[in-house]
Length: 68
Length: 149
Image 1 (cartoon, rainbow over the protein chains, first blue to last red):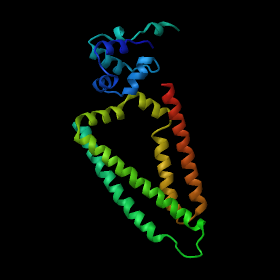
Image 2 (tube, chains in turn red, brown; image 1 turned 180 degrees about the horizontal axis):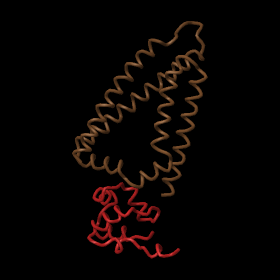
Image 3 (tube, rainbow over the protein chains, first blue to last red; image 1 turned 180 degrees about the vertical axis):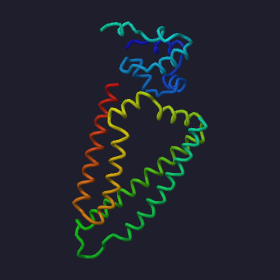
């Protein structure tokens, strides 16, 4: 899944470790989300979006979810 | 977080107990070793393995005590440890690799192997080899999942 996590994190000059600490996950998970290897759960997606002050749809791209 | 801190403190106590038990068993095994002139390598292999296993349990316990004590004394380390243990991706990987059931059965097998080693050497080797193979498969699956996720 495509996300804007890296872009938003860099805008705020945050390291992956700092973001991970803020949203209650590990640096490796943030890396996996950024490169699209791992799809975050609803709770983690909410925490990340909430941290950036945005909605889940503004951070995560759900366009692929409509394809079936 | 305070609840987690109490949990970590409880774990430190358990690991301290494990260290003491490992030290006591290590001394007992050392005294039990067959040092007679006609003793073969085969005679000492079971006791040797048991001593090695007990020593490694002791070392792991001491390392854990150091790691957990650092976490208890520092808020950031405690949060990092909490995140590490509650990370959803790692939880998924662990469950795909068959943990924690694989770990529990392997540890039980090794404990039973230590006890069985005093009575039957075939049972001892069978249990140890099974536990090692089981753990190796779990570790390989975990590594593959970590690469994929």
